[in-house]
Length: 434
Image 1: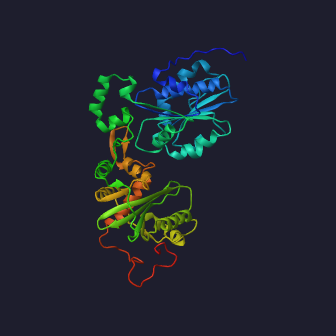
Image 2: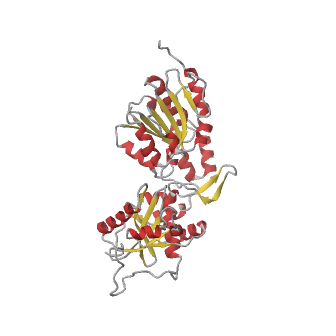
Image 3: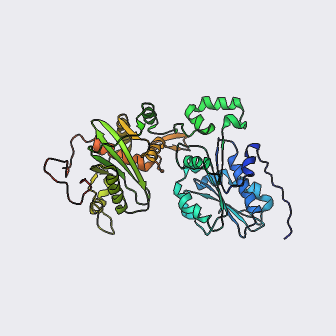
């Protein structure tokens, strides 16, 4: 087939020319709102699909939700790819097929299974801060391997989550192209308009959305004020583990989702969050081993293990409850009675007022607490009372379980099996023993 030059309607903004001229395989762009990052990266994807000339090339643009892909990028994809189309656009699949045999498709990360396929030659992940990290690590990255595909991550900060870590790593790795575009420096939005936005939005949201701040408080976050106070008072820092103080654990036990575990020491009315662990896709024996390894490493002794109320429910397949399954691996679980979620959040707020957190061992847990937030109602344009269920929920739910089970029970309704009374041994096979 004879080569010919085709002109499309895209004219790059000067701020994105260095991105278009990059040589690196991996890219991360931290950009303010209305900078034009979606249009720039979508056209970069189209250029790759045309110029790389890979047989049956497959390219993808992924949003956190499929409806976002359709609302935000579908019209752009049709418009800019129009001179290169080999057949009419397929709106049901959000897909265009180009004259050279390459295909570009829009996806939502809310359905990871729909992403799975034989391979990808190039991909853009938009608003990566709103995606589960597993979408990249477990689904998309393996699809790029055999054909040496490339990836671009774009978005606006939402705290120190996976997008933040990605950007920080890119700063230190020459294999990555990285760019941060702040509204005060880009010149894309007029200064008078930025001043109006700052006044209307408030400082935290403005810093996050337009100055690309990873430090700004998340709008709608339940514990924003508590976490800000803890940081200001120096209660988020390195904490020594007291080996003579028993270490309690608080769990959010996932099945298909992640499992989160806080490790907590109580000294008087102080609550010290000394460690945090999160995992997924593994059995209870894995978490039993985690508890064992941490006991050996830190030299602590275990106290109580707090779990949500539903661990008492028996599984139809085995006839056993998870209380029994946990006991089988040496974890004597306490099922915390069910309570109203918002009441539990208020209990957690009060507890955080006298809580210290280790900034190193609990890094992911701290960020989850900072970002744990309400759902936003797009129709009513207001915050709902209920929490948003995302990656932050696991750590927040586990801590809420502890606040309800330990601090909200002046007289315990169960008989503890061992509290170190003189001459009384711990139960056999339990993690209570040193």
